[in-house]
Amino acid sequence: MGSDMRAVVVREYGGPQVLEAARVPVPEPGPGEVLVKIAYAGVNPADWRIRSGQVRRFGTPPFSIGLDLAGIVETTGPGASRFQPGDRVYGVTIPPRGSYAQYAAVPESQLAAAPRRAGLREAAALPVTALTAWQALECAGTVGGGSRVLVHAAAGGVGHLAVQLAKARGAYVIGTAREANHSFVRGLGADEVLDYTATDFAAELGADGSRVDAVIDPISGDYGLRSLQVLRAGGVLVDVRGTGPDRTALRARADALGLGLVELSFTPSGDDLATLATLVDQNLLRVSLARTYPLEHAAEAHATSESGRTRGKIVLSVDTDPDADPLS
Image (cartoon, rainbow, N blue to C red; front, side):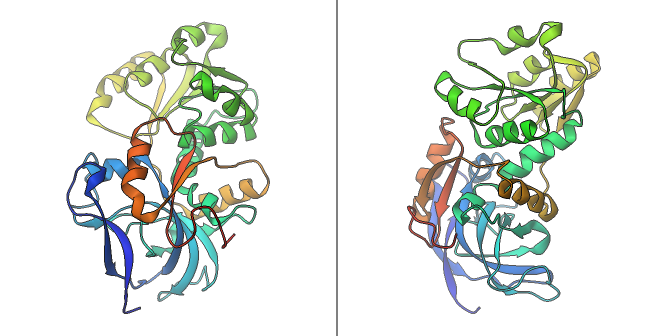
C-alpha cells in the first residue's frame, strides 16, 4: 500500500514496558495471503510469554506482537481466492507479523469468516483460545455423551470455552475456579465446580467412582501430576501449554500409569475456525470479554493478563472506540 501504520513493537525482551507504539510499513499480502484491516486484537498469555522471551521460536526482536485478530479484508494477494475485499474475517497471525497493528498480511488458511452473530470485538477474542480448547478436546478423543471431563481454570480464556465445547459434545463437565467465579462457570454449562483454593481436586475426584475420562489443563506445573490421579484407566490429560523440559516427570508418570498425555501445540486452522464460528452462530459457544484496552495501552493489557485473575479474554481496540463495535 506504500504507507505506514500504527503497531506495537517489541524491541527487546522484557516486561510490559518494552512494548512500544511505533509507525511501521503496511505489509503487502504475498501469494495466498490477504491484507486485513484490523479492528480488534485479542491478548493471550502466549503474547506476553513471547514478549518476555519465555518463547523464542519467532525470531529475535525487534518484531510486532499479537496472534488474534478480527477485521475487514482490504486487499488480496496473488492466488488468494477464499475472501474478497470487504469480507469480515477472524483468525491468527504469527509474529513477527503481529496483530497489535492496523494491518496484517495473513495466509487465507489461517482465517475464516467471522461469526455472523458476534461483533468483531468478540470475534477477535476467540481464535487462539477457541482453537486451543477445540483441538484439546479433539486430541482427548474420549469427550462425548457419557464421558466426564475436568477443565482447569474454567473461568479463564481457554477454560471457559472448553467447558462450553465439552458440554456441547454431551459430556459431564467439572471445572475448577475460585468461588467468586462459580456462578459464571455454572452458567457456561458446568455440572460441578470445585474451588481450587479450598478443595484438593485430586482428593475430591480421586475415588474410582468420581474419576474422569479427560483433563484439559491450561495451568501445567504440579496440576499435571495431580491430574493424573483423577483419570480413569485409558484416560487422557491434555496439557495445553505444550512441550517443555519441565514435562519429563509428567511424561514418565503418565507412562507408568498407562495414561494418555497430549502436549498440545495449537494449529492455526481456517477450517477449525469456520466450525467454531458455526457454533457461535448456533448459540453453543460464546466468549466472555474481560476488558477492552486501546492499542496504545497494550502494556497495561499485558500486565492485567499476567496477573492471572482475568475472567475470559482481554481485547485491544485498534481503530475503533473501545466501547463500541461499529463493524459488527
